[in-house]
Image 1: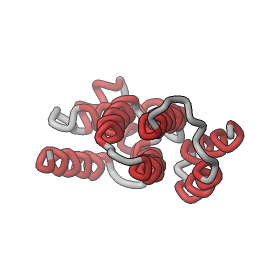
Image 2: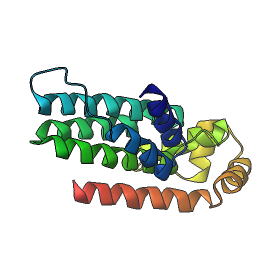
Image 3: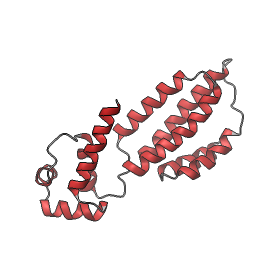
Length: 176
């Protein structure tokens, strides 16, 4: 079981949803060890523990803790609402997909330190002044260097990234 959990951890930390789900299928086929007299509570506890494993996988991928914490907290709230073991089993797959998507979207480990700092600041403060000049001053970099480095590492200009983040932030606000 631990070997399979490690395979899931590795797959999630790479954002590889298919490999993670395939490995999870091996765990899902093993009957859950009954620890309590309440089968549903056993499944909920397993799902919560599994959420922690997935959370650590996303953290190892360089995802900022704020994204992980928000997603993890919401997962636990949902788990506690379930009324059947089957809901827990299905939700474990949903969590795998969610964490893999998060790693693909927010992993910063492949970027240089200045770009990681810029991305984190942009994502955390989408309403702030995010002009090239302001960000460069904040990071202690030359604006031209920051612009060139950002485009080189992300493949899009800084202003386009800022605009995309602001649109995503606005969507989130509208939905919540």
